[in-house]
Amino acid sequence: MWILIVGMAVFLGVHSIAIAAPGARARALRRFGAGRWKAGIAALSLAGLLLIIYGFQAARSSHMQLYVYQPAAWMRHVTLVLMLPVFPLVFAAYLPGRIKAAAKQPMLAGVKLWALAHLFSNGSLADLLLFGGFLGWAVLDFVSLQRRPRPVQAPPGRFNDALAVVLGLGVYGLTLGWAHLRLIGVAPLG
Image 1 (tube, rainbow, N blue to C red):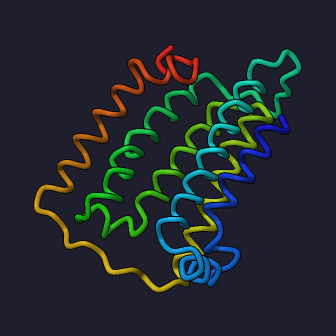
Image 2 (spheres, rainbow, N blue to C red):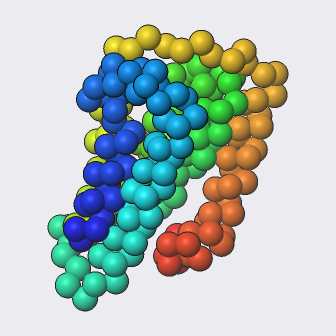
């Protein structure tokens, strides 16, 4: 379990620099340059993500797995419904349009929905650490972003919303039918 905790601390810590120390990013960019700063952040993010994946898999496969609550079987259906907009929101973060304007922070909205949806159908301590940690971080980051100046946005593309929805639902279908079982080891549809 400690590997999962370390991975969460590294990954979410790197993504929380602007929350905890708003001026630190600007100072680091001036000091190291954009390329080295981004490469360092990417390397730390990847290391944290790999630790999260390994730690979560190890915690799930442990015979000593601790369950905090046992979700009702029907909650899986709630999870499936809540997951529908997640991938379109993630794509909308990179494809400016009405979805991005309405959601303000579509990536964070997608992360919050993803985490909340998974908390409805998973009740182990590892699940609470992973999904609860990401949910808490996304809420804090959203609040923090409301206090920061907004960067200049790319102009909305004419077909970006349709593209975000089509790509997002396509990835959701691929995840349901194949990727979730192959990558996570759990078949969402049973």
